[in-house]
Length: 266
Image (cartoon, rainbow, N blue to C red; front, top):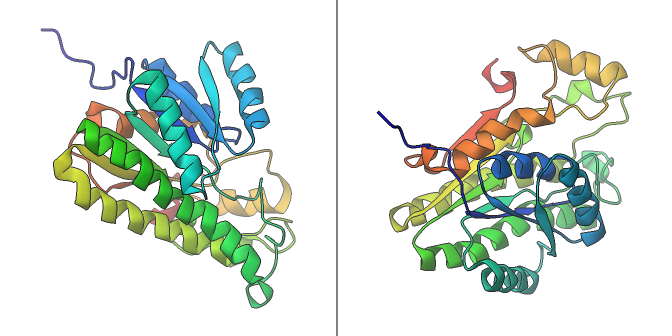
């Protein structure tokens, strides 16, 4: 008996923000493999274009679009361009965010001295940017009567950072990052329950620690504290992304899919 391919994404149009960053290309590879049309969006289109050139080597086709996720007008322009070109938007991955790779000006400041400007900068991208993406692109999905939104949360949107692993490593997790990612999980649940009956599914995906040439004391401490004994390879999010984007998760609403090697299960 022929079984439908629950993961089939043929001709579904996907927008991935933070297109020039570490994980966007992994999301693109995953969705493209199942037939999706990929748009990488970033405030820095040069970074997007560089990512697309690397993706082409792997046989992945994508296009670059500009989007400042903190600007509703920029989101609206992105929406108009994509709908005019492709006719619909089926998948949105709210992936843009400040991390230890991008950082705000004083990302490494202690809690006691953390500047309000940095708090606002991080919150504006990580949380307000996700809100605007859900609002603007979600409105189009409501008109279509279908769509899947995947908000990228964080390990530290579920639990507090383990403050003991950072001293002496040159790596930090500021308060605004953790609070903003907790907000992403709450936002996901709010919008998911609001729109579930209208054909638009909203879920979150929480990566654990993603290996990005870490070493030394930080890597040693992290590996010791994670049940699986290592950090995640960036490719290990691909299955979760395809699952949440596709009909395989048709009854999954407001869920936060945690892919962390067991960190939050201790």
